[in-house]
Length: 356
Picture (cartoon, rainbow, N blue to C red):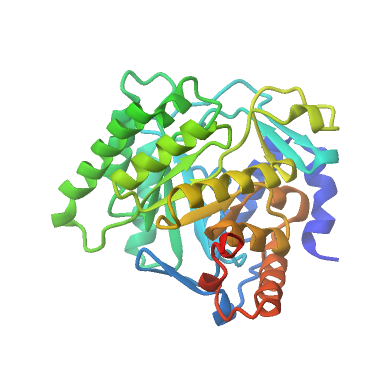
């Protein structure tokens, strides 16, 4: 029996947010054993000039304040995405705001970008960079809830953090900040990316490496909206898409008592829906834009299905709540078995295979 199996009853006796805070403290104190092992070469992949030891990443939301990126890399993740961070600290929405849906292996949250702000976040990433810590760590940037100029919030976040993260994710798809998803609209997204790309280009003289810029989108999009996003992403030569964030739908199929709570649904029920959106975006971008697949991944077969649908990398978070950090190693082992079964010697050969 692993440590998580022993700890799970205690964690589940606490509220979800209290349990999460406890886990962060344990990780910061070095009390969670490392599970790092050298990954099989078949799992390695290179994107945007970055060498990923394996394609399994930790999604944003777990390490909002960039406190435990290295501790989570030590759990076997190929990369860790920190944030979402906003320029100014904000408390987020009223509690309770996270709900476990145990019968569905799912979570509903309406956190609302609670974080300690850009200065504290940047200091941690800068310290990590200064120490020369290995491993790929991304920054997920957002806008303050009460911002008069949300686009400027993204510009500020990108400009201040450019030297300290390996890649950047523009989070315009959380359902828990009023009006945020409007930035996925054609004109708003065009303006946002125009300003962000210009910000990155203006900083070229002070950067030794130009970090890739990704956009994270919602699954709750119609065909026209998906097509508009694909067009604007290609127009601005954005480096990648993350598909997808949580959904505001799918309540009717849930069995747990908290199924009617307001917020974004993540976890197992999102898998097929988010994978279908991933496949749509791969098709609409003609496979030219690297994609990160997120939503409902809890085993290696599902990770492989995301990759075959068009993902070059995958991320997870909710499944950790139910299965613990040992899941990362299990997914990598099962993913490797899927690759070998189908005769692939590396991940890149399987990307988009379902479309061929």
